[in-house]
Length: 404
Image (cartoon, rainbow, N blue to C red):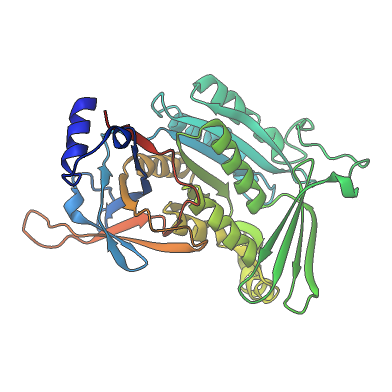
């Protein structure tokens, strides 16, 4: 194989004499590929389409077509899943449903159907009024381990549902507020001149402060653990422990997740940079929240805060699914739909030229699909994929071929 490759390379070189010194020179090949997954569904049936070919696809990069150089579909080789369930256990939110055994059993049964190569980690957050959080399990495919992790959830969903919860993220009065307790500070510049500063403490909680373009603090949230923090932690864990897997987050909540718009944009960037697919499983809002939402959303928006809908936004931007659930049986079917749509995706890729350097901005991606039905008519299709990418600032290891 090496000799054949050598002959091909030499055949492409200009025909001129080469001396002994030139024989020792190396030919360096640099290749960067932008990968993305695309889910294609029939608009009428809402079912995935699995029989498409590369000719059915068109990938636009900032509006310009790219030549597809990599293509696989369901049933062919795919990355294993690193699935992370984030359970928002607020007692007046999703916690009032997730403490029910039949709902947890339905979710457990769906996770048990994953093939051996796919693994699941579970993060529980908003435990008690102190907003504690805990990893109920690391990445695993063991059904007993997942069942044991989910069995701990009911006791975490309210003060009257079980014994006090012990977590690894307990906060202590001794460390709270000390300057040396801050382990990371992130500054996010908004589009309108505002700034959001996130200061992460040793226990994982965050102080979030928003300053307007005039330098005045508009809102300050102390000692919180929000959607942005959970996504960062989940993405970091998957990158460290499962770097060769397709990371996918399933956010289970009632949809209420206060987050500054600047913070949401930064979270979207993290998902897109790391090619993480974000999905949401949203339970019913309490009647009181439904009543207050039309009043609260405009007021929160005035101070730059989104209180509802950010999970759906992140799902759309990263190519994931946003599923609403109501009845008990919807939880299993909703999780099944998300997992099924993760495994039924096409993997596409296109090469970047060596001259294309990292410009620090997000490039918009659009995937278009055209296919005809058995009658020769254009099918009405719906495509989900991440809607952007960032160029890599580093070039992968060079493939070196020595002429001998």
